[in-house]
Amino acid sequence: MALSAELGWGLSPKEAESYAHALQSLLPHDASYAEFRKVCAYYHTNHALVEVLRNHGHPSNTHEWQVWEVNIAQILHKNGLAWSRDGAVELKDLIQIAQAALLASLPSFRYKSSFYTWAYKVVVLCIRRHIRDTKATKRGHQADSLDENPELDLPDPRQIDPSEQLMGSMLHHTIHAILLQHGDERLAKIFDLYAVHDRPTAEIARTFDLHPSRVRALLTDARKVLRNHPEMQAWR
Image 1: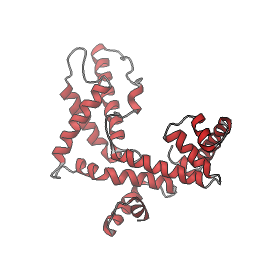
Image 2: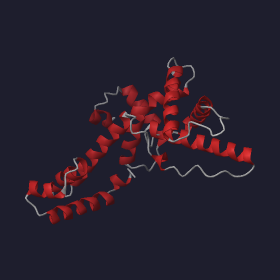
Image 3: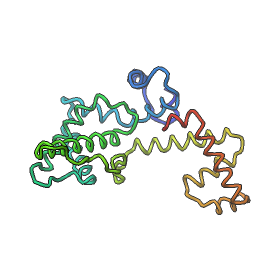
Image 4: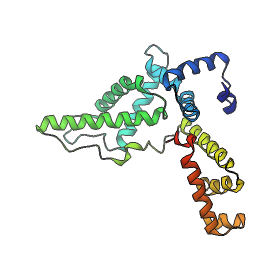
């Protein structure tokens, strides 16, 4: 697998064949190469954990689910879901409910994001639904919606996810390669300084001996190039 060599994964021929077989079931036949790279990278960094969680007979199954008990508790605390106003539901009960939902949902994980990001959403939605339904049943009417929490789409920033680090590196490499193809070598360097290193346009202008308005124009060009490029559209 060429991607293994490019990213230094060191896959054996047998492992590469196993990856290819798995990816066939995860990707549509008309998937772009950019989509293939993204799913393949998430598969590489997440599939071992997913298989352990799915396999009750695996020696590490119990340990990994214990780790996820802690993860679930942290997710619930972060989203204000680790409590019940009337004390009818304890945290340990919510964790068990979330674990059951996570286990039942594992077959639907398609490696389009990191496992942690996907599981985060499963846990929050499951517990919100459980609390809402419990309140509605007890009160005999529809409870207020619990789906308006802007934190839902944001995984815990304290969680260090190697697959997200890898995807960030791949995305940066893709952006740099696309902008280099544009013809103006400065475009890639200027965009990198602005978007990655957070340099102000005035500083970038001095670096390249340009007027700040010219730097802003080049950044606009870079955004247009990236927005219209097929490889970048696959990352959305």
